[in-house]
Image (cartoon, rainbow, N blue to C red; front, top):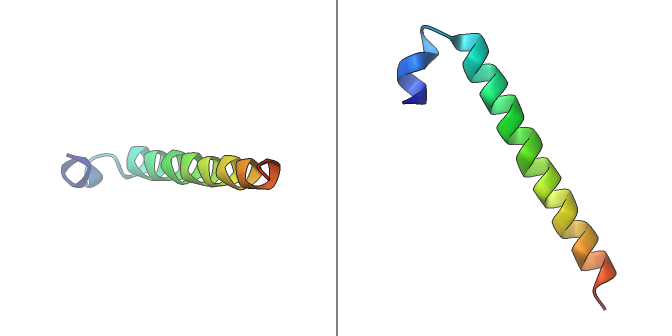
Length: 39
């Protein structure tokens, strides 16, 4: 699905990738915070 749209809307795909990377980074940060809080 994404690969097909890549040729037509590269900016949209890059935005999606950036948003996904940000979500992954945020999730990793939350997980790290949970690990710090837990004994």
